[in-house]
Length: 413
Image (tube, rainbow, N blue to C red; front, side):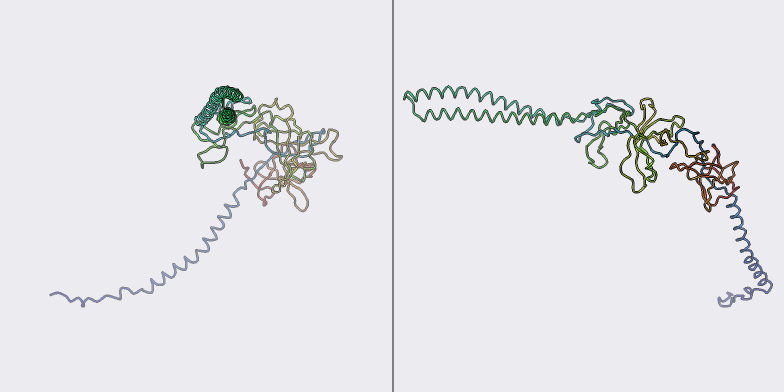
């Protein structure tokens, strides 16, 4: 016999939590809550230890030996090699490139052919102008023949009119015919002049399809290829070139440096300069100040100075846009002032101050050593050290402000 559905009753007693189980569960939660602060503290200690064991990264530079006696270096500055004659060659008209006759590094002479443009359309215009001129010249020849005949008839009509054989009207008609032909000849001659002008214009358009070097130099950039469109102005979006090539006159190379306006009074035209290229640090280049640009950069608080290279032809390794560091020399008769001479020159960023006292951080065996120094003349980017540093010492020029004597550091590569 089937058991009725409502006869099965749930056993609620199975859901009861005994007192022993309740006590054990509460104890586990209390242990877990008590362990959380311990774990947090342990994490903080571990992070602090890891942070403390991490070495700060620093930039270093070597102290440079000061020149013993002789001329005094008044100021240091940096800049780049810039040519005085540098031009991006462009076409005077818009056209398609049909020939390119150079490559990067090619030496070109003044007037040398660099590229050609499609000249088929302008040549057709030139031929049309020449045809108009030839037609006008042929018309002149025809009118001159007719004029000769009209002048003969005019003389005959004049003679017959005087003899009383012909009327005055016939003479007038002969005179009008001759004058008309003279006017047609004059008109045709003006048409020839107009055609000559159009021929010159069309010939100029044909000549504009050839691009030549404006001066002798070296091609440093090839900006167009055969088949591309070029234009003297930006047109056609990104599909139209505005230049053919960039040419530099290597005989016009010079140095352009930025001098802090606070030190520009130390610079004057004709002043001797010693320049050192970043690419050739062991080859000093004697130079002279050519001019001080009479304007300042408001954003950088600097003044541009252009420096000419003495005997430029001897330094064929000088290339445009190379980095350079220059030292402006004092007059020959000027010697360092009386008192302690500079032992070395260091970057200004290496010198720090504390309560009016100057000091530097020397790097030795992976540790920094605080060293008090006596500071001398300021040369712009460098400063003279009278005592406390020897030439060749490795100094921290950029690093955290929290550096302390004896800290271990890592040198940035």
